[in-house]
Image (cartoon, rainbow, N blue to C red; front, top):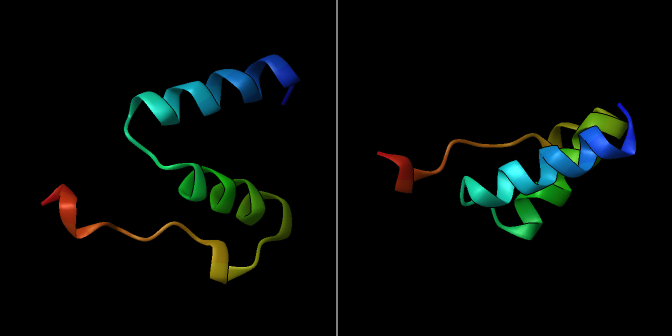
Length: 46
């Protein structure tokens, strides 16, 4: 991904209501593949 695409992704996630920690954890999961950073379903969505 280009920096422009990454920026648009982050802005989109913020618009969707993701917290900074959720966004950071997603980026860490994408780069590392470590399950501890894998996004989890929130109870607030139900």
